[in-house]
Amino acid sequence: MKIRATFAALALLWGGAALADPVYGTWRTAPDDNGNTGHIRVKDCDGTICGTLVKSFDAQGKPMESDNIGKRIVWGMEPKGGGEYGGGKIWSPDRDKTYKSKMTLNGDTLSVEGCVLFICRDGGTWTRVK
Image 1: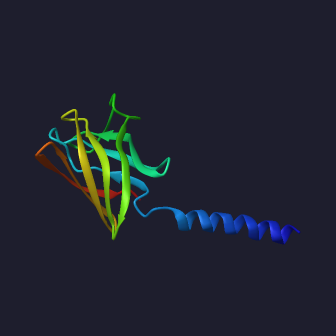
Image 2: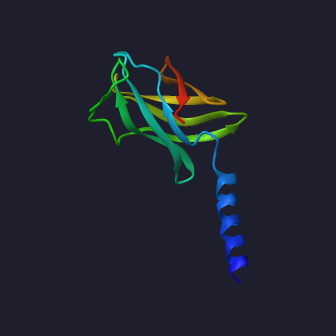
């Protein structure tokens, strides 16, 4: 009986890992207009992909306090296949603008871009935090 319970628990753990989207995890943003970066924790939020700022760093890479820690940065993203994500939005704290965005995953890098009306911005390449 104990063996069956152990195998059932392992199957649940493996099954959950198999369902995790490869974009889930923590990502370091490209430097903003002030040279600051942040760690964004990307996860599932009610069937779409979202991300929250969990740490901030100044231009020298030193941790810093920020009123934006805990705020939603990415929301509503959906996988489109082939490492492409879209249909969501990304908020840029340095400009206080929300962009209709898309992301492209390539291994441990995540290219981010977004548009407001006809003005588009390259959000740079985020790198996976290990």
